[in-house]
Length: 223
Image (tube, rainbow, N blue to C red; front, side, top):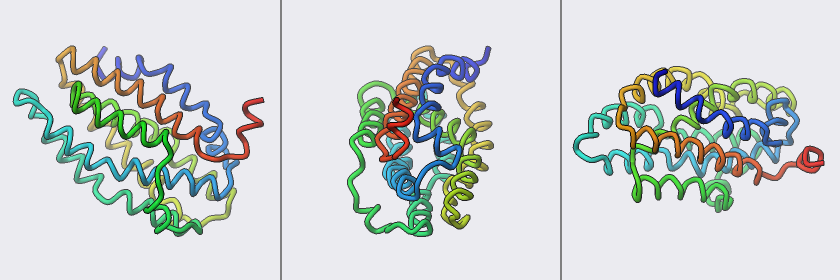
């Protein structure tokens, strides 16, 4: 079993919990309101705006013997620059106010996921951030295109309101192959444990982020 295969296996429970969040379940079926979609995009803007700073932090905290990872970080950086602006444009195309979204305060659950990753890289192990990368990329490949198509059809919104989801559904397939190749080169047991720990925790934190998004279907699913 490769390390990537082990990572997939050991995050199964946390991933399953995420995929049962009512907001996500309903979103995949197109059963969410425009306000819920805009609220989701707003929280996505806030955490995606940290992707590049996250990667810079990871690269700067690597000890000399692990700096071979910086090449992979740079490649990933080049793909991620500016994605938060795509999200703001999607908000505007969906009828929201992107200036208001940019200036808004993220939900506490969003702040917790952001803070957790900075803290882990600074206080424990910067390599662990690859667990967050795994959570985001693997989730995108599973739900982005399908969810975008369902919501677009249900709400009769233009395709330009879904550039973030559509692009990630396509980009993250190649990203996952690159990620798999990268993590399979990591042989240090402590680094592997850190990646698994962060992945498990960020699946849970992202589930909390989604649960905090206002959605009228919550009561129905909770009953």
